[in-house]
Length: 86
Image: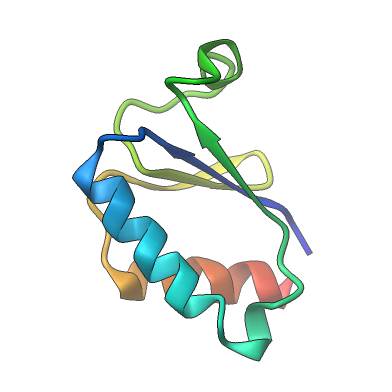
């Protein structure tokens, strides 16, 4: 199972919605064992600079960027499904 890394900004409305969707999806038992690291790029700019993205929220699965920018719940769920499948 690969780790998911999510980059956000505190005041980003798209990030807030993605976090709400993610929290709702994580209530599903299929996703309870997923490792998800949430990084606020405003609080961790040095770490964020090590990744290649422009928009937030951004999701990485392992080292590969999978989602970036305004996202739907379905897109986030597809990422969780991919991560859970291993």
